[in-house]
Image (cartoon, rainbow, N blue to C red; front, side, top):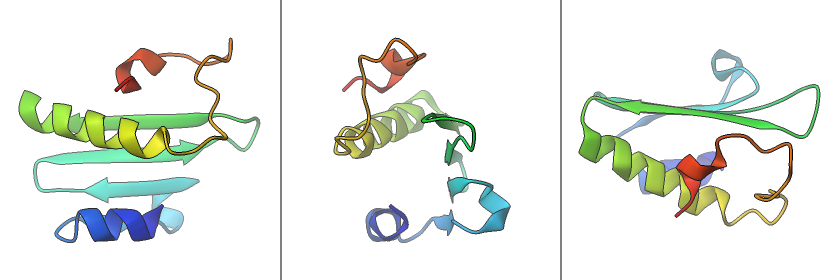
Length: 88
């Protein structure tokens, strides 16, 4: 996923080493998001924030679009939580 982020956001810092933990982080001057995988089960944790609502919405839609391309993600699983934020 890091190459995709580099391509789509060349101006952002993509952190995909030990500083990001078990995942990756995308840093902008006014926004960020983190995608981390669980070491204990088949779970992803996604956090994103921005200074403006417009930038937040842009990130939310971008993350949703990326994640919906992964057939391994079961959006209807009973263990899914808060997936409504990533419906596109």
